Image (cartoon, rainbow, N blue to C red; front, side, top):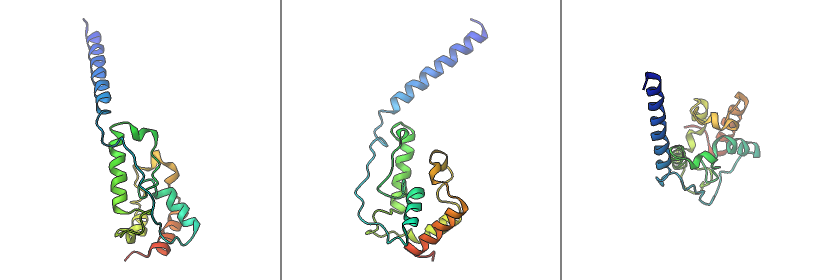
Length: 150
């Protein structure tokens, strides 16, 4: 067996092992069950435009109205998305406004700093991308709806 044949043999062997690992990790249950608990209360939005903008840019991670895309059912991506949504909901949940939302005061600042929505979210969710005008409208609307940064 020559070097090229051996290299090809090794590549095929590695690909088979990778395929086996990908199939086996699908059996790990975390991240496969996607729930959207009932929505109980939203903030008193200052306008429908503010709600629509925050819904478009924030609700997938910060609400009980998450849209779970097809790839959210495939490990290891399902693990990452479940972790991100669980973390987002625990920090701020726009559909559980009847519970304390300690990070609500940070919305405008997070958007001003460019921390929200996170850069890694945008390639797969281009509708969440904010123009400068969207960003300012979201900041203004969040401050009017949930209060200014303190």
